[in-house]
Length: 318
Image 1 (cartoon, rainbow, N blue to C red):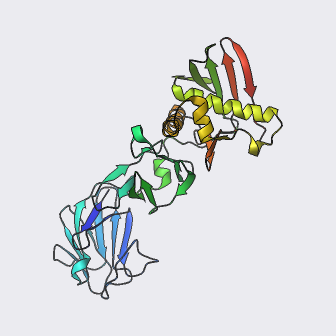
Image 2 (cartoon, rainbow, N blue to C red):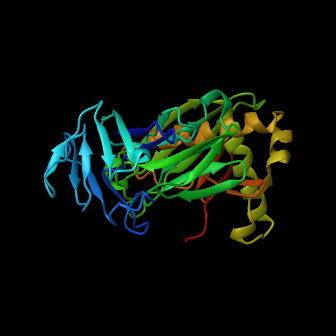
Image 3 (cartoon, rainbow, N blue to C red):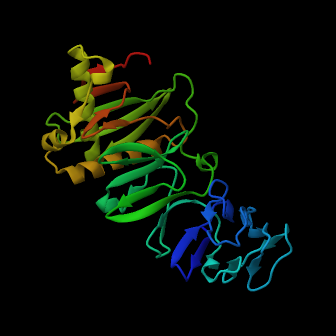
């Protein structure tokens, strides 16, 4: 998480593994508007061990007042001052040179960042979650109260009235430790087991010949409620695209909780299931959102009440 700070503008920026500075906005990650800045003025890169700078400019890039030889890579050190061109506002202090990673970077100049794991990230904090950010097979996804959307490097998001920049410091392939390619037919079966009074709900995931116990959790009953709604709609003859949707406020009422707490249950359910499948095909859509509504994904499930099977659901082939 290499960070540069401009004391003139009080702007902070986080370097990407290959970072370009210059006047040309289509070619440079950081655009410098001074007239003596070249189209591509300087490059900074992460080698896997160090951060290095290469001057590409006509008017020079200074490191601690010294101009390196043009076209040569020079290692950077914390505390270095970088000066692009001759204008006083193009001076940057190197404040951090740790390795790149995927994170959220505060846009208030405080230099705060939130490292992100490929699994679930409850934000801004786990106990007051407004959103969840996680990696799928092809992208990073922000899942919040207003729905889900993919994130691209440099996107801004707002959490608890604070703005953050999404920094894709590593390519997605380097972060895919929890999400493996789905093997043909390797779809997990969700097996819910309830006590007779429905005060206790446990969940097992069955994948091939393997069975994983997720224990008893409050959010398992939330998943079960949504699964039952999907089954009920299927039995009524609704088409697959219309099955299972429940309004968030209605689901909260059915469970006897408020919507913020329901959102935390949703995030924790996703987190537990994805972690359970960290060595199995886990890039699955556990829950689906659309504005103001939620439903259980198109997954097979069985429901046992006591020792007797209450119901079972098998989604049609995709």
